[in-house]
Image (cartoon, rainbow, N blue to C red; front, side, top):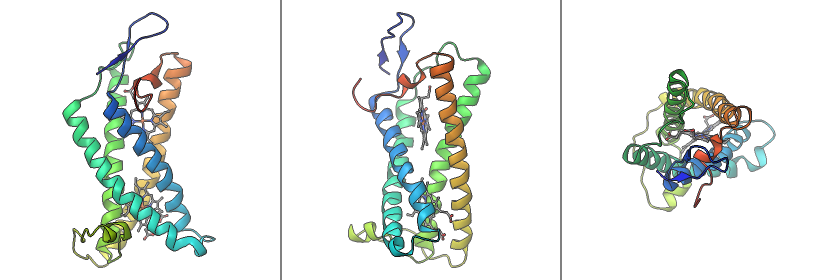
Length: 189
Ligand code: HEM
Ligand code: HEM
């Protein structure tokens, strides 16, 4: 992993590699689209653009499924930088647990979205346009149950992202430890 020099002249900040950083911020951007679009398209008041919102949510979601899988493979292949030396053992474990759970929730969100849609017999217009056929058979009423899992996972993901961001901001501005630099900028640096 590349190390960025610390302006305060102390130990260099260990940074995630450029591929991991790019994956992180592309996923953040896509989730930032998926959450509000998902909420809007299932809420009253958006009937006039509901179809467009569904097409956008399903298409972006299908791309995100591939991006999340690729990100996980890259994470296994490339690993992560060492934790900062000031982290306690407990903090290391909590951060590892948070990150692992975030990956599980991202995977659950995208897979349940795909299964709910295709298993429910609905199209993913983007994949149809690309000539990619359904990868699973229809599963009848079970698709409705999967939709409930999708919904609860969205709550869990939102909550845990809040914890994750609060931890980063606390390290950055309360502990003054340049936590953001480990994952920023998305490219170059
Ligand atoms: C990180 C990725 C995703 C996020 C954050 C997300 C978020 C959401 C949210 C917040 C809802 C509204 C839940 C509700 O109140 O009922 C929703 C519904 C839905 N999402 Fe996703 N979604 C993701 C991935 C996907 C994918 C990959 C697909 C399909 C390819 C998909 C298809 C759907 C469908 C069909 C619904 C409507 C479910 C129903 O009410 O029957 N989503 N999503
Ligand atoms: C959808 C929202 C987000 C998700 C799903 C997410 C997910 C993750 C995951 C899974 C990791 C672990 C990377 C690894 O070890 O492979 C990570 C690291 C990180 N994220 Fe996020 N993140 C999100 C939003 C944010 C935001 C908004 C910030 C900025 C405030 C941020 C800053 C960081 C930083 C600085 C790290 C490196 C942590 C460290 O090791 O010190 N993330 N993120």
